[in-house]
Picture 1: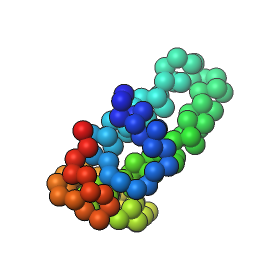
Picture 2: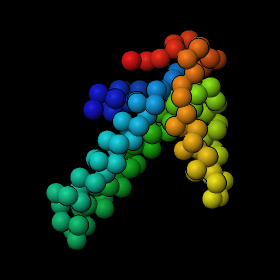
Picture 3: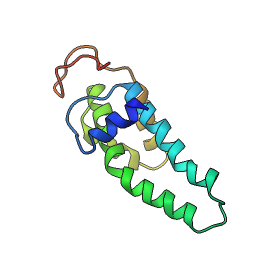
Length: 116
């Protein structure tokens, strides 16, 4: 949960680096929080989809920022996010990039090696 809150504190920070743990914990908790309305509110009501859309709209900027920081951590520019829009292979390619190890040495995006 601390990683989720850490990403929210850096709501629109596109500089720096994000470790694999920070990125994947944020992604995990985002999916969990998106499913909560379906668990506690009857899915036949109109409120569950509205809550999910509001949550998704609020999380666009933080998820984009943490993805860019994750790409920085692997030594790539944030513009690599656009590979996601290539049909069929783009999303798979981005997933592979996001799963790669962090660069242990300092790179051009930050001088820190590994965040705790």
